[in-house]
Length: 129
Image 1: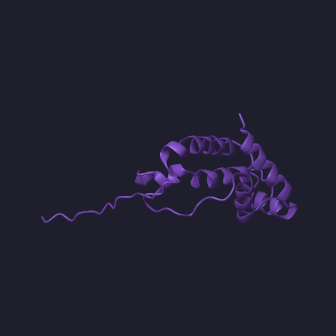
Image 2: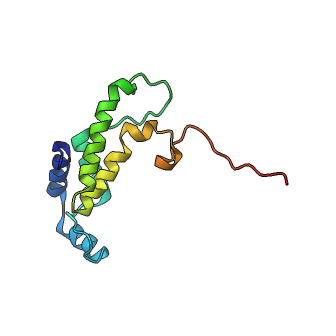
Image 3: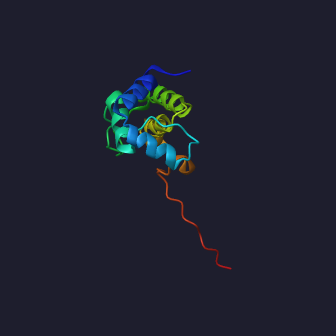
């Protein structure tokens, strides 16, 4: 099942693809993964073109990032990212990773193993034995 936004991102990737990049990436992966033919900056720009720019503010107390306002949007972005990760082409999978990393899920995540943006610092204690 492909979401509408994921389809639009794949269409953007197909428009911006170049045959030389497709050949290079396919040879680099030894034919194990098909590619559309976009480098990472092009993939990132394609995601931004469809989704729109994300706020780079990660401060505390932002009223614009209230959970009640962004939960639905973040949930649909995660669904779009999962849809892209299930795509056959490596470029679409890269777009899914970029989309998932830019959702509010990772910005608000408190779990260190999820994205590394933990609000708490964990330090190893030395034992005095």
